[in-house]
Length: 230
Image (cartoon, rainbow, N blue to C red; front, side, top):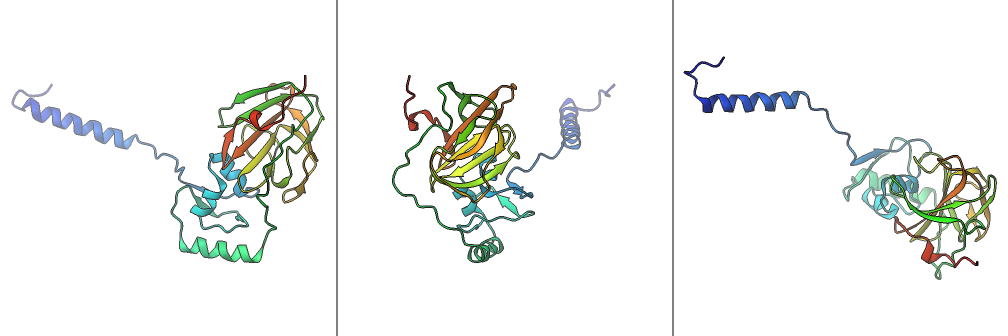
């Protein structure tokens, strides 16, 4: 019981202070999502893909050269700020390990990655936006346009075993839920070249998840692809 001699205003202030102190004691620090520590098997493209940013921006924010080379243990920032040390290291890597440039060239002539008309446009909880294409297990998957393979692996949650192809400085395409991969990272591939075989999606049925990103942003692939012949 609170004595009558204590003013109610003082009691109210003390109560508020106690509640604030208790809230502070029970607070758990939130996960810092402004940085990312590179792990073995990561590429700049896969990290940018996972976090929904343009790999050009991620490279620029961290002073990474045009080879887009990163190393395990390196801390990447998801902001325009970067350190001089990061920039110096990136420049050294860029001169030490040059990559053949990909020409922006003429407009891309896209083609369907599999021969089927059973394609469904879908949005995904992980931020993906693309086509779910039904087929048969082991069916051949072909690259939708010429480019360079910049990622193969299963480290991106929700895509299964994934292949990402860089077509130029604007376009990337992704081929998810593959059964086997027929190419390696840094391989140059031609339009229509077999790059993987079809595996099973989350529901256990054979399928390909196909995605095109423009400047790092997923877009509806259907307007870019040729009309399906009925």
